[in-house]
Length: 81
Image (cartoon, rainbow, N blue to C red):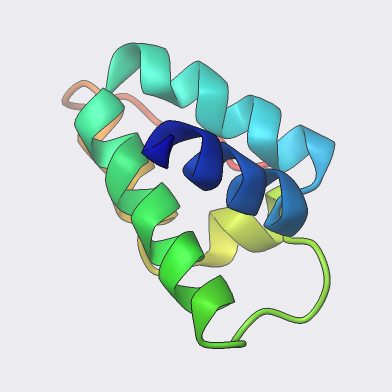
């Protein structure tokens, strides 16, 4: 039941590309992805989101750039598009 509610909220606040990106990242770092999802759910609950969150917007949040950095190997550059 809780998982259904989470998925419902995320479906309402994320556009298709942002949702797909989070799903892909969840395969590699599920705990970090859950933290990003929790952040988005909290923002939605407090009315801090206007419209759907795009992939570009998601990448500009305070959590996701850190998330990408954590996934990079030393010396590896992660491109944000």
